[in-house]
Amino acid sequence: PSSDHCGRYGHDDSGNDVSGSTGPYGRPLTPHPLMSVAFLLIALSALIRSLLGEHIGPHMAWQVSALIWSAGFALFVFSMAPC
Image (cartoon, rainbow, N blue to C red; front, side, top):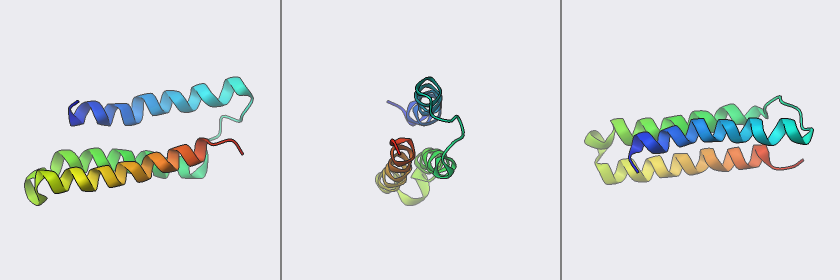
C-alpha cells in the first residue's frame, strides 16, 4: 500500500471505528482526551513518511513514521478500551 492509503486508513477507518463502537453500546459519544493526541500522531506519521524521506533517507523516514504511528495507534487502543 502507498503512504496515502495508510494515511487514509488512520483517519477514515479509525474515525468510523470510534463512532461505531461507542454509541450503539451505550458508551458516551464524547471522546477520550487522548483521542486527539492519537489522531495527531497518526497524521504526523503520514507527513513524516511522505515529506521527510528525501531529507533523512527513506528507510529512516519509514522507521520514524512507524514508531510515531505505533504510538498513536496504542493511544487509540488505550482510549477505546473498556473502562
